[in-house]
Image (cartoon, rainbow, N blue to C red; front, side, top):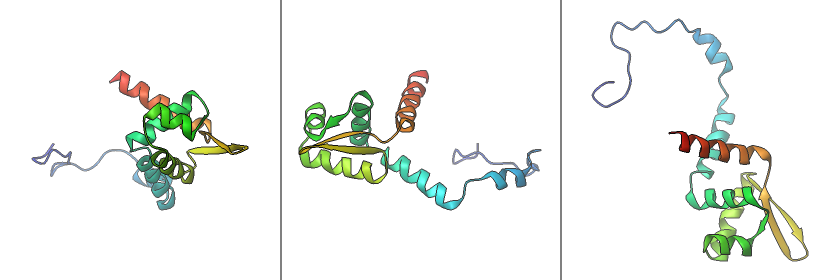
Length: 121
């Protein structure tokens, strides 16, 4: 670690035995990197994380979410719209009621694995 707390090779470092071209050839492309970063940005808000965690437990309507989170309907709806645009949640309409659930099992797996990681550390 240098003075700024970042890791750096010293002057005598010639790199590792790793095949750099092999690593580079398997590196995700720019579009995928941006999509992945955007997903983590969406998950970077505590309110959205709480909404997702509630939806891990059950499909819920906006009213249910407002009660669970002690938040206003417009705030919850705004966050749900962002999560829908990121394909993290999906909606199902029954009459005038809209129910929200996770878009797929991968979202639940990410949340549960991250919670396990936090408990582990």
